[in-house]
Length: 105
Image 1 (cartoon, rainbow, N blue to C red):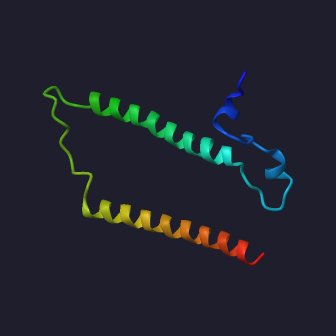
Image 2 (spheres, rainbow, N blue to C red):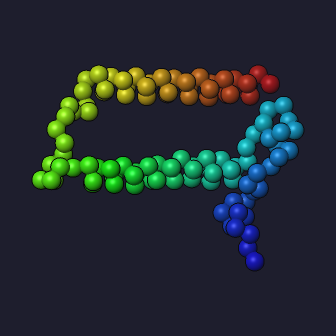
């Protein structure tokens, strides 16, 4: 019988020794490529279902959306771009420090 995790991954899903008993903890490739991708994707799909139901049942009797301010204002767009830019800068700093730590080891 084929082990379910080994069917998708060539390595272990979780290795305690590689995470807890070393100076620099690391995750296995199987964990990075399965759990760290599947959990956010699944949570987005679940939230999407509730959002769809909210949109479907949150309408007036004539099936027109409720009147209100447009959610896409200039302030909203600036906040979105600012948040995305800060996230990219933070990710770049993390990747740069990781690369430099490997170079100067």
